[in-house]
Image (cartoon, rainbow, N blue to C red):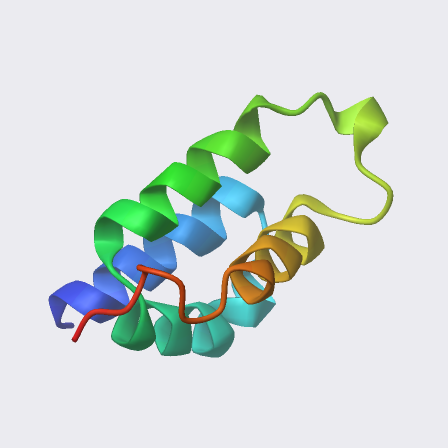
Amino acid sequence: MNTEEKFAREIADALNDLEAIPLYESFTRKYSEAYLRKLLQRVLSIPESQIRKTRGALFTYLVGQNNGKDTSRD
């Protein structure tokens, strides 16, 4: 398991969303670890009662909101 896969697994575990590991792997290949960790911390800091769907859905939404703005691994 490479570092991207490990990080994707860490995200999935934190969000309790193991079914989405392939999606999180695509994020870890595309975006910087610092950016993803910042978003993950933000999502985890929000009380469950304030989240409409799931933490995983919110994380995915937030990743898409900043698509390409100083977040790329390149």
